[in-house]
Image (cartoon, rainbow, N blue to C red; front, side):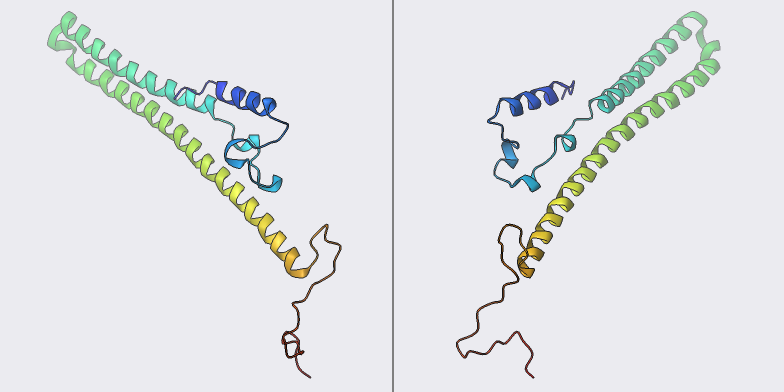
Length: 164
């Protein structure tokens, strides 16, 4: 699960190697207005590294606490216990804060993925509604036609117009 930026570089290289078409993979058959921008796919490598670093620091603090307890008991015996309890409390709280900050960073990444997915889906929905609206009003660009009405029923009278 190492995100070191190589994924983004390989994605750009794969896109450049293509036939000039954008949207390989899942978006290959979609129209251009439904394509996903590269900005929407960028990884959060920096935030993941910071979260990983905070978790590693929290683990190192716990190891430091264990080493400090062992050294304190070996050098001073039971007279070091009150000071060791104070230090242990301080280090455990700080390690917990670091671990929590790392989890908050990962939560921000996940919520940003949800936000991006929502933005993509709303954009696609907006394009589809606009297209359906243009089809309904007959103002679809490129058709050159005005509003189109359904053909009259076999009786000759239109039912979509109010009767006078």
